[in-house]
Length: 368
Ligand code: AMP
Image (tube, rainbow, N blue to C red):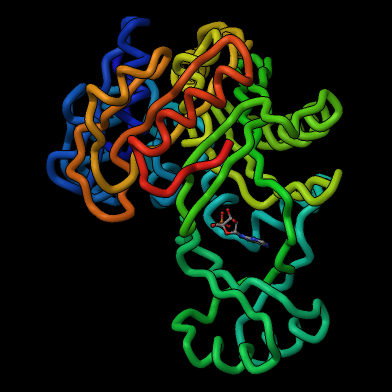
Protein backbone atom coordinates (compact mmCIF):
# COMPACT_ATOMS: atom_id res chain seq x y z
CA UNK A 1 0.00 0.00 0.00
CA UNK A 2 1.43 3.35 -1.03
CA UNK A 3 0.78 6.60 0.81
CA UNK A 4 1.04 9.75 -1.30
CA UNK A 5 2.48 12.82 0.42
CA UNK A 6 2.31 16.45 -0.69
CA UNK A 7 5.69 17.86 0.31
CA UNK A 8 9.05 16.14 0.51
CA UNK A 9 10.84 17.73 3.47
CA UNK A 10 11.96 16.24 6.75
CA UNK A 11 8.41 15.72 8.00
CA UNK A 12 7.68 13.56 4.96
CA UNK A 13 10.96 11.75 5.48
CA UNK A 14 10.11 10.93 9.09
CA UNK A 15 6.56 9.86 8.11
CA UNK A 16 8.08 7.39 5.66
CA UNK A 17 10.63 6.11 8.18
CA UNK A 18 7.76 5.37 10.59
CA UNK A 19 5.43 3.99 7.93
CA UNK A 20 7.87 1.48 6.43
CA UNK A 21 7.76 -0.65 9.56
CA UNK A 22 4.00 -0.99 9.00
CA UNK A 23 4.61 -2.14 5.44
CA UNK A 24 3.66 1.13 3.73
CA UNK A 25 5.46 2.60 0.76
CA UNK A 26 5.66 6.31 -0.02
CA UNK A 27 5.54 8.66 -2.98
CA UNK A 28 6.14 12.39 -2.54
CA UNK A 29 5.10 15.29 -4.75
CA UNK A 30 7.51 18.14 -4.22
CA UNK A 31 8.40 21.22 -6.33
CA UNK A 32 12.10 21.30 -5.34
CA UNK A 33 14.63 18.91 -6.88
CA UNK A 34 16.31 16.35 -4.61
CA UNK A 35 14.21 16.84 -1.45
CA UNK A 36 15.35 14.98 1.66
CA UNK A 37 12.29 12.68 1.67
CA UNK A 38 13.65 11.34 -1.62
CA UNK A 39 16.38 9.49 0.29
CA UNK A 40 13.68 7.21 1.70
CA UNK A 41 10.90 7.15 -0.92
CA UNK A 42 9.96 7.90 -4.51
CA UNK A 43 9.75 11.59 -5.46
CA UNK A 44 7.81 13.13 -8.32
CA UNK A 45 9.09 16.65 -8.90
CA UNK A 46 6.27 19.00 -9.81
CA UNK A 47 4.19 21.95 -8.73
CA UNK A 48 1.45 21.33 -6.18
CA UNK A 49 -1.13 22.57 -8.69
CA UNK A 50 0.11 20.48 -11.65
CA UNK A 51 -3.02 18.42 -12.39
CA UNK A 52 -1.13 15.74 -14.29
CA UNK A 53 1.21 15.20 -11.35
CA UNK A 54 -1.71 15.19 -8.91
CA UNK A 55 -3.50 12.57 -11.01
CA UNK A 56 -0.36 10.48 -11.08
CA UNK A 57 -0.03 10.77 -7.27
CA UNK A 58 -3.67 9.69 -6.88
CA UNK A 59 -3.15 6.69 -9.19
CA UNK A 60 -0.17 5.50 -7.20
CA UNK A 61 -1.67 6.00 -3.72
CA UNK A 62 -4.40 4.49 -1.56
CA UNK A 63 -4.52 7.67 0.51
CA UNK A 64 -2.86 11.09 0.23
CA UNK A 65 -1.66 13.21 3.13
CA UNK A 66 0.47 16.37 3.35
CA UNK A 67 3.46 17.48 5.37
CA UNK A 68 3.31 21.19 4.44
CA UNK A 69 0.30 23.34 5.28
CA UNK A 70 0.64 25.80 2.42
CA UNK A 71 -0.26 23.35 -0.37
CA UNK A 72 -3.15 24.86 -2.36
CA UNK A 73 -6.54 23.88 -0.94
CA UNK A 74 -7.78 23.51 -4.53
CA UNK A 75 -5.16 20.79 -5.12
CA UNK A 76 -6.21 18.91 -1.98
CA UNK A 77 -9.85 19.10 -3.09
CA UNK A 78 -8.95 18.01 -6.63
CA UNK A 79 -7.09 14.99 -5.22
CA UNK A 80 -9.91 14.24 -2.80
CA UNK A 81 -12.19 13.52 -5.78
CA UNK A 82 -9.78 10.77 -6.85
CA UNK A 83 -8.47 9.31 -3.59
CA UNK A 84 -9.12 10.02 0.13
CA UNK A 85 -7.09 12.99 1.42
CA UNK A 86 -6.40 13.19 5.16
CA UNK A 87 -6.37 15.46 7.11
CA UNK A 88 -9.49 16.83 5.35
CA UNK A 89 -8.90 19.77 2.98
CA UNK A 90 -11.04 22.00 5.22
CA UNK A 91 -8.33 21.75 7.90
CA UNK A 92 -5.86 23.18 5.38
CA UNK A 93 -8.29 25.91 4.44
CA UNK A 94 -8.81 27.01 8.04
CA UNK A 95 -5.13 26.95 8.96
CA UNK A 96 -3.94 28.86 5.88
CA UNK A 97 -5.71 32.08 6.80
CA UNK A 98 -4.95 33.49 10.24
CA UNK A 99 -8.22 35.43 10.33
CA UNK A 100 -10.40 32.44 9.36
CA UNK A 101 -8.44 30.34 11.86
CA UNK A 102 -9.03 32.75 14.76
CA UNK A 103 -12.72 33.05 13.92
CA UNK A 104 -12.92 29.26 13.78
CA UNK A 105 -11.37 28.89 17.25
CA UNK A 106 -13.66 31.59 18.62
CA UNK A 107 -16.72 29.88 17.12
CA UNK A 108 -15.76 26.75 19.11
CA UNK A 109 -15.42 28.73 22.36
CA UNK A 110 -11.61 28.42 22.36
CA UNK A 111 -9.87 31.55 23.71
CA UNK A 112 -7.55 33.47 21.37
CA UNK A 113 -5.77 36.84 21.75
CA UNK A 114 -7.96 39.88 20.89
CA UNK A 115 -7.77 40.36 17.11
CA UNK A 116 -9.15 42.39 14.22
CA UNK A 117 -8.96 42.14 10.43
CA UNK A 118 -7.05 44.90 8.63
CA UNK A 119 -7.21 45.79 4.95
CA UNK A 120 -6.54 49.52 4.99
CA UNK A 121 -4.55 52.10 6.90
CA UNK A 122 -7.78 53.31 8.50
CA UNK A 123 -8.50 49.74 9.73
CA UNK A 124 -5.03 49.56 11.25
CA UNK A 125 -5.47 52.87 13.05
CA UNK A 126 -8.93 51.84 14.25
CA UNK A 127 -7.61 48.49 15.50
CA UNK A 128 -4.72 50.21 17.30
CA UNK A 129 -7.12 52.45 19.20
CA UNK A 130 -9.70 49.70 19.84
CA UNK A 131 -7.27 46.99 20.99
CA UNK A 132 -4.50 49.29 22.31
CA UNK A 133 -0.76 48.87 21.88
CA UNK A 134 1.35 46.75 21.79
CA UNK A 135 0.00 44.79 18.83
CA UNK A 136 1.32 42.25 16.36
CA UNK A 137 0.43 42.70 12.70
CA UNK A 138 0.52 39.51 10.65
CA UNK A 139 -0.15 38.69 7.04
CA UNK A 140 -3.26 36.53 6.88
CA UNK A 141 -1.59 33.97 4.63
CA UNK A 142 1.79 32.28 4.17
CA UNK A 143 3.39 33.32 7.46
CA UNK A 144 5.64 30.84 9.25
CA UNK A 145 8.45 30.94 11.81
CA UNK A 146 7.52 34.55 12.61
CA UNK A 147 7.88 35.69 8.98
CA UNK A 148 5.38 38.30 7.82
CA UNK A 149 4.98 39.84 11.29
CA UNK A 150 5.53 43.28 12.77
CA UNK A 151 5.21 44.41 16.39
CA UNK A 152 3.70 47.85 16.97
CA UNK A 153 4.68 49.33 20.33
CA UNK A 154 4.35 53.12 19.95
CA UNK A 155 1.73 55.21 18.09
CA UNK A 156 4.34 56.21 15.46
CA UNK A 157 4.81 52.51 14.58
CA UNK A 158 1.29 52.32 13.17
CA UNK A 159 1.99 54.70 10.27
CA UNK A 160 5.51 53.33 9.75
CA UNK A 161 4.25 49.73 9.64
CA UNK A 162 1.52 50.54 7.15
CA UNK A 163 4.04 52.26 4.85
CA UNK A 164 6.37 49.27 5.08
CA UNK A 165 3.65 46.67 4.53
CA UNK A 166 3.38 45.14 1.14
CA UNK A 167 0.26 43.12 1.85
CA UNK A 168 -3.19 44.55 2.46
CA UNK A 169 -4.72 41.36 3.81
CA UNK A 170 -3.71 41.43 7.44
CA UNK A 171 -4.79 40.57 10.92
CA UNK A 172 -3.71 42.42 14.06
CA UNK A 173 -3.70 40.82 17.44
CA UNK A 174 -2.81 41.82 20.98
CA UNK A 175 0.85 41.16 21.80
CA UNK A 176 0.50 38.51 24.50
CA UNK A 177 2.98 38.89 27.39
CA UNK A 178 3.27 35.12 27.62
CA UNK A 179 5.31 33.30 30.27
CA UNK A 180 5.63 30.18 28.17
CA UNK A 181 4.76 28.80 24.76
CA UNK A 182 3.16 25.36 24.71
CA UNK A 183 1.74 22.98 22.14
CA UNK A 184 -0.69 20.10 22.25
CA UNK A 185 -0.60 17.32 19.67
CA UNK A 186 -3.58 15.09 19.11
CA UNK A 187 -4.44 12.36 16.67
CA UNK A 188 -7.86 11.26 15.45
CA UNK A 189 -8.61 8.01 13.66
CA UNK A 190 -11.17 7.34 10.94
CA UNK A 191 -13.53 5.92 13.57
CA UNK A 192 -13.41 9.17 15.58
CA UNK A 193 -11.12 7.82 18.31
CA UNK A 194 -8.76 10.49 19.68
CA UNK A 195 -5.47 10.38 21.60
CA UNK A 196 -3.32 13.22 22.91
CA UNK A 197 0.36 13.61 23.71
CA UNK A 198 1.42 15.47 26.86
CA UNK A 199 1.63 19.26 26.55
CA UNK A 200 5.03 20.37 25.30
CA UNK A 201 6.87 23.55 26.28
CA UNK A 202 8.59 25.21 23.31
CA UNK A 203 11.42 27.74 23.33
CA UNK A 204 11.94 29.85 20.20
CA UNK A 205 14.81 32.11 19.25
CA UNK A 206 14.71 34.45 16.25
CA UNK A 207 11.27 33.00 15.47
CA UNK A 208 12.66 29.45 15.12
CA UNK A 209 11.86 26.58 17.47
CA UNK A 210 14.98 25.61 19.47
CA UNK A 211 13.80 23.19 22.16
CA UNK A 212 10.67 21.22 23.02
CA UNK A 213 10.16 19.66 26.42
CA UNK A 214 7.10 17.47 27.02
CA UNK A 215 5.59 17.66 30.50
CA UNK A 216 7.99 20.45 31.52
CA UNK A 217 7.94 22.03 34.97
CA UNK A 218 4.81 23.98 33.92
CA UNK A 219 2.74 20.84 33.33
CA UNK A 220 -0.37 20.07 35.41
CA UNK A 221 -3.22 17.58 34.80
CA UNK A 222 -5.66 20.54 34.72
CA UNK A 223 -3.70 22.33 31.94
CA UNK A 224 -3.50 19.07 30.02
CA UNK A 225 -7.27 18.52 30.31
CA UNK A 226 -8.01 22.09 29.19
CA UNK A 227 -5.76 21.89 26.11
CA UNK A 228 -7.00 18.39 25.23
CA UNK A 229 -10.61 19.55 25.46
CA UNK A 230 -9.97 22.32 22.93
CA UNK A 231 -7.97 20.07 20.62
CA UNK A 232 -10.77 17.50 20.71
CA UNK A 233 -13.32 20.15 19.76
CA UNK A 234 -11.20 21.12 16.73
CA UNK A 235 -10.59 17.49 15.69
CA UNK A 236 -14.26 16.57 15.94
CA UNK A 237 -15.52 19.74 14.24
CA UNK A 238 -13.25 19.11 11.24
CA UNK A 239 -13.99 15.36 11.19
CA UNK A 240 -10.22 15.21 11.26
CA UNK A 241 -8.05 12.19 10.49
CA UNK A 242 -4.34 12.32 11.37
CA UNK A 243 -2.12 14.35 13.70
CA UNK A 244 -2.97 17.97 14.54
CA UNK A 245 -0.78 20.44 16.47
CA UNK A 246 -2.14 23.47 18.33
CA UNK A 247 0.23 26.16 19.61
CA UNK A 248 -0.69 27.98 22.81
CA UNK A 249 0.47 30.91 24.92
CA UNK A 250 0.50 30.53 28.70
CA UNK A 251 0.03 33.76 30.67
CA UNK A 252 -0.09 33.07 34.39
CA UNK A 253 -2.62 30.23 34.59
CA UNK A 254 -4.42 31.33 31.44
CA UNK A 255 -4.05 29.59 28.06
CA UNK A 256 -4.72 31.23 24.70
CA UNK A 257 -4.52 29.52 21.34
CA UNK A 258 -2.11 31.01 18.81
CA UNK A 259 -2.49 28.78 15.77
CA UNK A 260 -2.79 25.23 14.52
CA UNK A 261 -0.88 23.08 12.05
CA UNK A 262 -2.85 20.28 10.33
CA UNK A 263 0.15 17.96 10.19
CA UNK A 264 2.91 16.37 12.20
CA UNK A 265 4.84 19.08 14.01
CA UNK A 266 8.36 19.96 15.07
CA UNK A 267 7.27 20.09 18.72
CA UNK A 268 6.34 16.39 18.44
CA UNK A 269 9.68 15.05 17.20
CA UNK A 270 10.55 13.91 20.74
CA UNK A 271 7.83 11.25 20.40
CA UNK A 272 10.07 9.10 18.16
CA UNK A 273 12.02 7.92 21.20
CA UNK A 274 10.05 9.59 24.01
CA UNK A 275 6.57 8.10 23.49
CA UNK A 276 5.20 4.61 23.09
CA UNK A 277 4.03 5.51 19.55
CA UNK A 278 5.55 8.43 17.63
CA UNK A 279 3.49 11.21 16.09
CA UNK A 280 4.68 9.98 12.67
CA UNK A 281 3.52 6.41 13.23
CA UNK A 282 0.20 7.57 14.68
CA UNK A 283 -0.36 9.87 11.68
CA UNK A 284 0.20 6.97 9.29
CA UNK A 285 -1.93 4.62 11.39
CA UNK A 286 -4.75 7.19 11.31
CA UNK A 287 -4.68 7.95 7.58
CA UNK A 288 -4.53 4.30 6.52
CA UNK A 289 -7.24 3.31 9.02
CA UNK A 290 -5.23 1.28 11.54
CA UNK A 291 -5.83 1.40 15.32
CA UNK A 292 -4.07 4.33 17.00
CA UNK A 293 -1.09 3.66 19.26
CA UNK A 294 -0.52 4.68 22.86
CA UNK A 295 0.75 8.26 23.34
CA UNK A 296 2.23 7.42 26.77
CA UNK A 297 5.64 8.94 27.51
CA UNK A 298 8.60 6.62 27.93
CA UNK A 299 10.82 8.17 30.60
CA UNK A 300 11.36 11.94 30.23
CA UNK A 301 12.80 13.61 27.16
CA UNK A 302 13.68 16.86 25.46
CA UNK A 303 14.20 17.75 21.81
CA UNK A 304 16.79 20.20 20.55
CA UNK A 305 16.71 21.36 16.95
CA UNK A 306 19.88 21.37 14.87
CA UNK A 307 19.89 24.74 13.11
CA UNK A 308 22.33 25.96 10.48
CA UNK A 309 25.25 23.53 10.80
CA UNK A 310 25.56 19.87 11.67
CA UNK A 311 27.39 19.29 14.97
CA UNK A 312 29.94 16.53 15.46
CA UNK A 313 27.97 13.27 15.43
CA UNK A 314 30.59 11.74 17.72
CA UNK A 315 30.08 14.47 20.33
CA UNK A 316 26.26 14.25 20.23
CA UNK A 317 26.16 10.47 20.42
CA UNK A 318 28.68 10.38 23.27
CA UNK A 319 25.89 11.79 25.47
CA UNK A 320 24.10 8.78 26.92
CA UNK A 321 20.45 8.76 25.87
CA UNK A 322 20.94 11.18 22.93
CA UNK A 323 19.46 10.26 19.54
CA UNK A 324 20.56 12.21 16.46
CA UNK A 325 18.23 12.71 13.50
CA UNK A 326 20.09 14.22 10.55
CA UNK A 327 17.74 15.11 7.72
CA UNK A 328 20.34 14.85 4.95
CA UNK A 329 19.99 18.56 4.15
CA UNK A 330 22.73 21.06 3.43
CA UNK A 331 23.43 23.50 6.27
CA UNK A 332 22.44 27.16 5.85
CA UNK A 333 21.85 29.95 8.39
CA UNK A 334 18.50 29.51 10.15
CA UNK A 335 17.78 26.20 8.39
CA UNK A 336 16.50 23.20 10.35
CA UNK A 337 18.75 20.33 9.30
CA UNK A 338 18.19 17.85 12.11
CA UNK A 339 17.21 17.37 15.71
CA UNK A 340 18.41 15.55 18.80
CA UNK A 341 16.10 13.87 21.28
CA UNK A 342 17.61 13.06 24.63
CA UNK A 343 15.92 10.71 27.03
CA UNK A 344 16.42 10.11 30.75
CA UNK A 345 14.69 8.58 33.75
CA UNK A 346 14.45 11.73 35.90
CA UNK A 347 14.11 15.46 35.19
CA UNK A 348 17.40 16.19 36.98
CA UNK A 349 19.22 13.68 34.79
CA UNK A 350 17.52 15.13 31.71
CA UNK A 351 18.59 18.67 32.59
CA UNK A 352 22.18 17.53 32.97
CA UNK A 353 22.11 15.86 29.54
CA UNK A 354 20.54 18.90 27.88
CA UNK A 355 23.30 20.95 29.53
CA UNK A 356 25.89 18.68 27.91
CA UNK A 357 24.24 18.82 24.47
CA UNK A 358 23.47 22.53 24.28
CA UNK A 359 27.04 23.80 23.66
CA UNK A 360 27.64 20.99 21.15
CA UNK A 361 24.60 22.01 19.09
CA UNK A 362 24.65 25.73 19.58
CA UNK A 363 27.04 28.21 21.15
CA UNK A 364 24.00 29.97 22.70
CA UNK A 365 22.55 27.70 25.30
CA UNK A 366 18.95 26.55 24.83
CA UNK A 367 16.94 26.47 28.07
CA UNK A 368 14.76 23.69 29.39
P1 AMP B 1 3.29 32.47 14.57
O1 AMP B 1 3.85 32.50 13.19
O2 AMP B 1 1.92 33.06 14.69
O3 AMP B 1 3.40 31.11 15.21
O4 AMP B 1 4.25 33.38 15.45
C1 AMP B 1 5.61 33.07 15.65
C2 AMP B 1 6.04 33.47 17.04
O5 AMP B 1 5.80 34.88 17.25
C3 AMP B 1 5.23 32.78 18.15
O6 AMP B 1 5.77 31.51 18.43
C4 AMP B 1 5.41 33.76 19.29
O7 AMP B 1 6.67 33.61 19.89
C5 AMP B 1 5.36 35.10 18.58
N1 AMP B 1 3.98 35.63 18.56
C6 AMP B 1 3.07 35.43 17.58
N2 AMP B 1 1.90 36.02 17.89
C7 AMP B 1 2.06 36.61 19.09
C8 AMP B 1 1.22 37.37 19.96
N3 AMP B 1 -0.05 37.68 19.64
N4 AMP B 1 1.74 37.80 21.13
C9 AMP B 1 3.02 37.49 21.47
N5 AMP B 1 3.87 36.80 20.70
C10 AMP B 1 3.40 36.36 19.53
